[in-house]
Structures are given as structure tokens and as C-alpha cells.
Figure (spheres, rainbow, N blue to C red):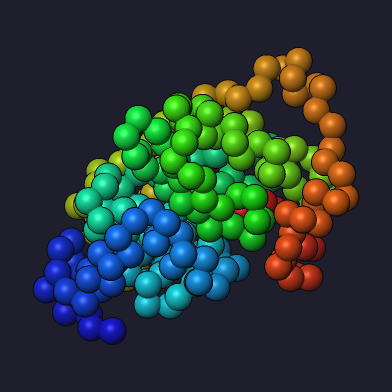
Amino acid sequence: MPTMADGPFGFSAQEWRTLQRLKTPQGIQRMLDSFGYHDADTAWSPRRVLSEGRAHCCEGAVFAAAALRAIGKRPLVMDLEAERDDDHVIAVYRQGPSWGAIAKSHFTGLRDRAPIYRTLRELALSYFEDYFNLRGSRTLRGYSRPVDLSRFDHLEWMTSQKPVWFIAEYLVDVPHARLLTPTQRRRLYPVDRLAVDAGLHGYGPYERRRGSSG
């Protein structure tokens, strides 16, 4: 794959055309689904993800944001905040008045969402039932406002060969809205074994031992 920066934002022309050919959020999700899951403590840029064909949840969301930009949408990501579990990062977009999402996850229920949600709170809540750890605890607690990654253009977030940890660090510090009241949290009960097994479809033995939802 060429590395000459003759396309927008430091991509090569061929890399940029690859992203543009995805055409829709659904096309971006299909490419993300084709990538292997990257089980590593890394922060690859979208260019590195495109080159390696692997991504974990945060890398996948950042890649999706770059691809959304290539098809003419804002590069937005949102953090889903968990308790006793990993946070989950999703790329979000609007079609008309409604919100949808693109995401990478080991858990089958934590991937994309069709653009049917009237508010970001509705979108975040759509992840609640499928957001659990390996003990079956429902762990989703809050969500951040959307972050437009163009704020990091000066750091070359889309094509940097260096880790882009500054994105993850920024998402941790963004204010999060609470999804549950204290009373609702006390009334939570674990999901059953059938739901856990369904959520873990395709999950390998090593990942099952790790016990996170990302």
C-alpha cells in the first residue's frame, strides 16, 4: 500500500479512495467486521489499522470516524462508560434526524446500530442489555457527548505512525451523562447463561478468560 501522502489529511490517494469506496456507514461496518480483533494494548491510527487489517474497539471506532469523514460525514466518536468492565468506544453519525453507530467488539451485541435513534441517550441505552461482563453483570453506566476528532488534526490522528493515545485519554476526561439512577442500579440482576453464550459467539478461549466487553 502506498505511503506517499498525496491524498487528503496525509493519506495516500489510494488509501483515501479505499475509504471513499465504502460509501455508507454500513460499508464501513462491513470492512470493520472483516478485520481481525487486535488483542493488544495499543492505539493505532486509522492508517495503521487499514494497513494491518486489525483493530480493537477504540481503534475500530477511530478508524470508522476517519472513514465517515472520507464519505462526507463528521468524524465523531462517543465513549460508553462501564463499571467493573472496559469502556466501549463507538463511532456515531446522523442520517436525517436520527443517530446510528459503527463499532468493533468481541461481543456480538456491541457492534453497529441502525440510524433510528432520536437521541444519543436512546442510542447509548440500546447497548445496555448486551453490555455485560463474563460474570453476567450488566455493566453499562454512562455515555459521553460526541467528540469530533477533527480537533486532533494538528496531531495527525488519522495517519500518525505513533500511537494516538491522546484520543483515549481525552475520552476518559470528557463529561459523561448517567444512564441509571441509584435505585435502578440496585435492582439490576445478572443476564442468564444463554444470553452470555450468545454474546460471546466467536469469542476465543483466551478472550473468555479476560472477561471484558470491549
